[in-house]
Image (cartoon, rainbow, N blue to C red; front, side, top):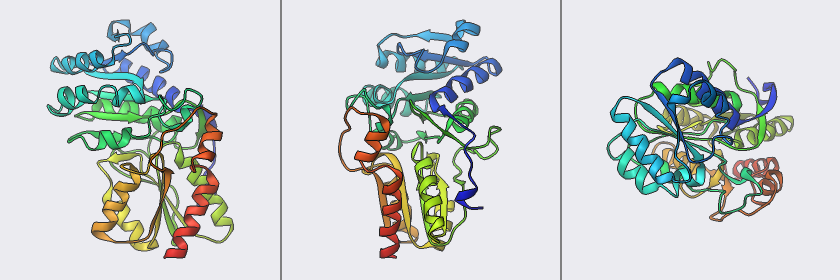
Length: 320
């Protein structure tokens, strides 16, 4: 199983995977309720609203109120999914999530689109790069960052039967779609191994999984054996898979569309420090806000593109 064996099926928006997933699980589970803060179109909620209007709540541009309504709905046995941009799903309503959802373990699914730099032209005020850290620090909060359309759709459906608060993070642009359509390669809390290797482990999440795949293919062509692991569940973290891999390769690179402070990289480094200290290089934003630009321009400028992953691997191999 090599990185070069991974093939793209098509390109689709991860947020469209959410739209299809929420429609299907809404039809299957009568307790699923969708709330939005005036962003039904952005979350592809049209089919859900058309066919299941009685379980759709338009809260308007009142995100804090939406979180409170969602918390209340769980008391009656409902499974509320809240929908707004990642910046407004976390930073704007952190107090409400902490106090009304996490503290009492409410079964709310906080669903966040338009995360990271690939939001693009909307700029720094919307491109939140701190949300994974904010959410993973909340006791009892599960944090999931799927990598493509298929995985986002499967994760959207899976969290309905997963008890407790969940933060589900996905994005805006069309992105390579390569995971299994049936979701047999997705289990909450279990890392997805995409390739086996002996020289270096690359851990990635979200959109950066594809960048890691592109880098892995280039590195394999140079004779470097890459073990690539998709950490779609940031919390609870699959520590067993991490330790097993780094014990073999003895070095790692972490890739995320997020600040390197407090994100996936720090979670991997903590596991390594406690169990198997190794050299680690981070690919992510370096304690900075974003800016307006196309997704491609921003990933390149802020060091999250394929050449940056390759360079990180070369650095960590030199330190090995």
